[in-house]
Each structure stands twice: as C-alpha cells, then as structure tokens.
Length: 425
Image (cartoon, rainbow, N blue to C red; front, side):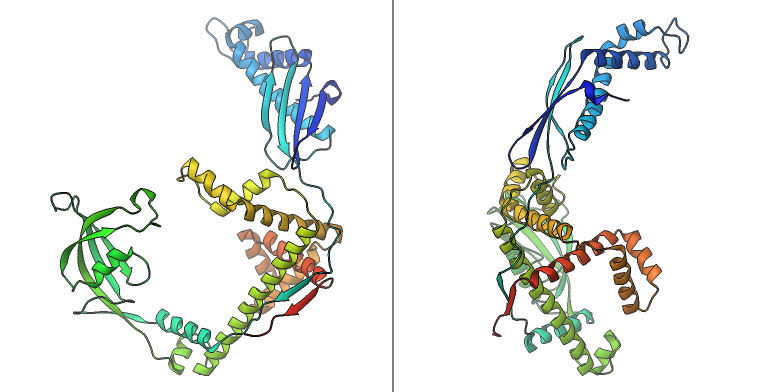
C-alpha cells in the first residue's frame, strides 16, 4: 500500500544507549479507507451462502468479518506507517521494533509507539601512543614431544586384552544399570564405550571400572560431583551395577622413520619433527599476535569510551550460548548476565574495527579479496576460480573479507603504537 508520509504525525524520543522510541499517528480517514479496501478485497474472494462468489456486498463482509478486517487493516497500516516514518526520519534500526503502545477506537486516529535500537555513532580520536607487550612465543622440546606422542596415539591400534584390570588409556565396554531400593536393577541397563582416565565418566564410576576384571559384575555406591551436568543430581547418590564387558589397550607404533612416512610426505623422523616445530611456531605466533591485537583494541576502547545498544550485546551473548531451547528461563537469564560484560567488550571491539576501517578507508576491496583467493589457490596448487566457488558455496567469502579488513586495521594501528617483546622465560 502507498501511504503519504506527510499525512502522519511523527515524533522520535532519544533514550539511553542508542534506544529510540518513535510515536506515529495515522489519521482516522486513512484507517477507514484501509478498512474499506480490505472489505472490498475480501468481498471479491468470499463465498457466502445466498451470494455468488465475488458478488458479496462490502457491507455484508463488514458486518460478518468486521473485527478481523479491522485487525488486518491495522496490522498493514502499522507496518507501512512504521517503514515510512523510519525513512522520513532517516533512521536505520538494528533491532526488531517493539510495539509498546497501540491506541485505536473506530472512527478515531490510530496512534502507536515503537521502540528500537539504532547503530551507534561515535568517533575514535585516539588511535595510537600506546605500549603493548607481545608475549614470548618459544616452542619447547616438551611441547613437540607431546604432539609426537599424540601422533603415535592417533596411529595406534586397539588390541583386545584377555585379563587384567583397566588402567588409564584403556578402551572399555561396560554395562551400567541403576539399582532400586531392593537392590535389583530398575531397567536393562545401558552399554557404554569409554577411554579410562579421560573424564568420560564421573570419578566414582571410573574407580568402579578400574576395580573390575573382564566379565566381572559388581554393585557400587556412587556420588555425583557438584559440577555434574544434571543439576538435579549434583551431590546425590545412587547404587549401580557395573559389568566390564571388554577391555582394549592401545598398541602405539614406534616413533621412527616408518611412522613419519606413514603420517605424511616425510622421509625421516627428523623431517616430521621439523614440520611439527614449524607448525607450532606459526600457531604460537598467531596466539601472540591475537594477544597484542586484543590488548591494543582494549586500550583504544578505553581511550574512546562509548555505549553500545543492549540488543547488540544480547545478540552476541546468545550467539556465545548457542542452542538455549533446553535451558530454563531463570538459568538462561543468569548465564546471559554472567557473560554480559565480556559480550559488551566484544561488541565494542567489533564496532571500533568497523569504524576505523570506514573512517580511514581500510575495508577490504574486491581486488584485495581476489588477491587473497589467488594466494590460497597457489598454496594449494589449484585454480583461483575453484577456490572462489568453494568459499562462496560454504558462505566463507564474508569471513575472508572481514579477516582482510581486520589485518589492514591492525597493521594501521600498530604503526601508531609501540609493540615491545616480552623477555623469553
């Protein structure tokens, strides 16, 4: 529908933290005309006894469907008037409009108020002059040995054990059944596969498993820890029956040249170690760079204070929490409140990066994106068009563009501050 914005009465009230409350009045004549149009449209479609289809008088429609027609007309008018009022006031909401007031009686003006958040407008004036220490990023022999041990485990083979009790690292199959007051199982029990010592079961159950021989069945009293996932069972006790069905030990290969050739394009164990060291150096450098970026951004946010819309903080917090449909509402409110400070800080960081990129022309261009795609293609010995298509299909182009923009912003910011190196431990 078309609506002349000049016929509307519009007022906007600024509230805290980029909240706006807009009141709109639609003249009664426009409301009446919209109701008439809705009745005419329905009359052309309705099939009522005694009338031919499409020949039902509008007055009959109004008398039969008056309330529904009025609601339909009001819904359409509110939506249209809201959009026109936003355009007229040059407002761009970043949250869903919240209808707070609606006043209407037949043959009177329609008045409503809608609250929403707008994108914050702020200046980032102090960009440099900070001192940020880059953490030391030394890779130790112990860290390399730990990675090599994981490689051995990943290439190990589980071997059945015929005797002996489970130890840490063993793969066991068990049947666990709850026992009732009479000491008999309340159900058929459930089968579980788990690796002992990795926290797959609560401590009391793992202790029970360790005490069993293969094929043995015993009853145990267990207590659920205070941090157990099911809150209703925390600190509670119950008696269970555990049967150790099987036990396997991991037979790991020797750490030698054969293993190196098995896991990749390496001729010797020394080649594998060199690659592990190189990858860990890169990872350590990335982690160190992340710390520098975070500290630098926090200093800039602190030096250029501004408020952020509550709706942006709430959306970020919900993104962190993930699927919340099974979380009770009171617990959900508690979780949101716990992460609100970190969520607000994260939103401020995001907004600061966007504002600096916009103000200083640092946003990634199409040419920047194409160049990065070409680099990825060359590194993987493939075609750039193929890489682009894969990124596009996976919805990763926007993330890649954001990554390039952030790099440009941080390169720009680091030139304006002093980045020192922490002494090696």
